[in-house]
Length: 243
Length: 237
Image (tube, rainbow over all chains, first blue to last red):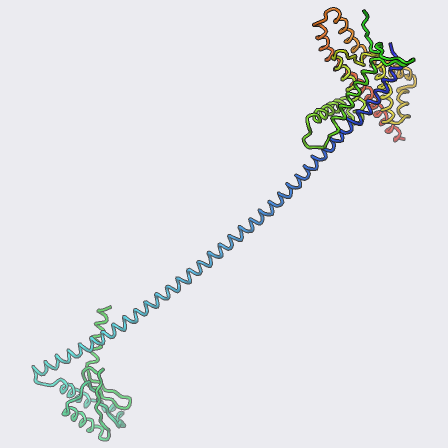
């Protein structure tokens, strides 16, 4: 049954087939599989590296983004602060300007008021003086100025002795009125002054700001006898009424 | 009418004691087919990420064989793959081609199965010696006592004989039954028997390869165990 020649030939055949398959099948395919495995492993490693790199990059960019966000917030806060400070400064400046203008207006108003009051005072004084003068002339047949001067002279004569002594060295007397005095009246004043201070010179002078009455001036001394006092009172009451 | 049950008996050419019979011719045919197919399949191999269909098929085949070797031996499959794989491919292709009319499977010849069994018979000590060295391997026949030496040797031979006869018997019986049925019922039964032959042929190829693997692996595994024990004993004073 067994042909030993065939058996030995078959053994040889099997060994040859083994060698052939080993050469053409097992080794190439196993090597190929190993190479592919290696290749895939390499690709996986590369992918892992790239992923790690990408993650690092993401982290870095996130950090940068956070820093930028912080910087932005800081700048915004600074800008807000600066804007607020600027706004306050402008407000303060505007307030000051308004205040200044208000003060200016106030001043102008006061000045206007003062001017008006002065004008009123002057007008009232003139009216009062006119009425008085007219009343005196019509009712009593007397001149206002004359009565004024007479009264002034009476007061002057009643000057206390010690004051009179203090004015002893006066060398010059100035008689101030609003309008020129009638010559008779002027002479009366001059005579009265000469009677007391025989050496002193007597001058007559007119001033617009003296409303009604008479002022007597010498070295640093003034004797007033006019309507200024009650005109002041009037002005005071008017100011109160206006405010 | 005589039916040649053995392809050894179909002689094409004769020169003195040398005969060119069907066994050799069809063996060469299978060898050419396998080698040429392997060459054509692997000549254009590239380590691509996505292999082609044929490459995929071959890789899957080798993967299955490797997995089987791994499962049976629990050892590195690369060491046993060429021998066991070639056994399996040769026997399987021989048995499967038996369905081709006019093809005489070489495995139906006791000469072929004997040759393969002798190869296994030689491969067992070959692998053993390669794994452990000659001295360690030979010592295995004297275990557990030198008295066991004849039984060990008988076991070794009978194993080889059983392997050869099992394959031969199965394949030859398939061929013989096919031939007998062909004479009795020429149309239907032979086809069924051929189909059955495909199944048994494939199973026989698997069994032959796995048995060879088990013989080789169990011997070398036992030897490795023994070597470890010996090494452990030598270490102790």
